[in-house]
Amino acid sequence: MKRRTLTKYLTLSAIASSLPVALAACQSSSDTASTDSITTNNKPVKIDSTPRDDGFAAIGTVAELDEKGFISDKAFFAGSLLLIRDPGDTSALIAVDSLCTHQGCSVDWESDAGVFACPCHGSSFNADGTVATGPATTALKTFEAIIEEDLVLVKAIT
Ligand code: FES
Image (cartoon, rainbow, N blue to C red; front, top):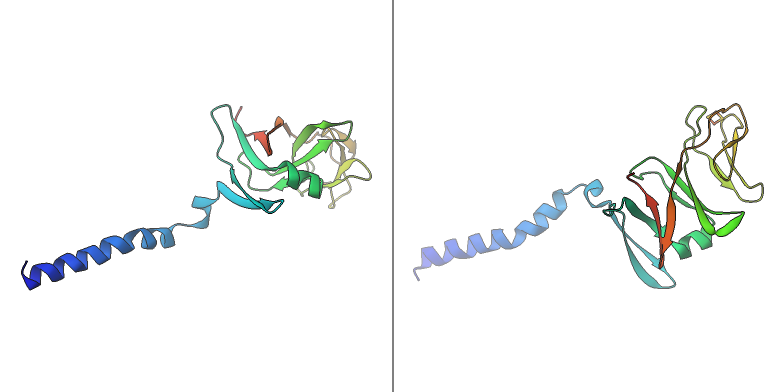
């Protein structure tokens, strides 16, 4: 092999090997947002939030839910999401759109009172999303939610 040919070959090889790194650096963080990695019980757990064929998408782990008492996902496909265990049947889950139906503030789950409370104008919603106190007059939108193995899934697509 001639020296000039060898130099060309090595240059092309160096460019080709650095291409994946360059492409990864150009990728925005939202491009990779569908897969999160969290740690529960010192075990890394991969959460792929891409909706499955049945429309369900993982939003967290059972351990995370039980540790915090809720799971919040403001970037969920179908809206801003807040998920709790049903206070009346802790084997069931309740997932609501966390945007208040009055003027769109984010509600918080207040477990002691058993309501989703809005900090802006005082509306509160029962655990099933129905209005407890106004000024809101419309219930929070709800989503179907299930547990499969260690994961909490919410139906993103109906
Ligand atoms: Fe929630 Fe007004 S935005 S009560």
